[in-house]
Image (cartoon, rainbow, N blue to C red):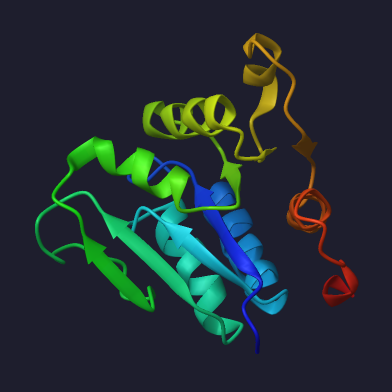
Length: 164
């Protein structure tokens, strides 16, 4: 399978609820089936779920870890890079991606969405609820994982025929 780009899947780690985990796993699988590399923060919650979805779909995921080693890394990530940057790795994640899908929100997720918006990386929000009413600029909203991935593919100029 030829890889056509890198898409970050970001969202809560430890505070991720079951619905965010389910959605992230589905997004990771859909992105992988579309030939995209799934990039995450490499830890638990939404990050682990997206990597698991990519793994189950036969795709590739890259986990950019905040610490100086691989301890605590998602076992589903194909590749992990211990950055030693702490929260600053969020900037590395954003700058290494062609687009982001933010599944749910947390402080770290908000920083990634802000960095992406400021640097021109397209962002799609999934399961954000009324928090989107307070964002300074409108961002694409998706109601389902399929809508999120179809929007990302459209933003990247890629066909969405892999979504079925």
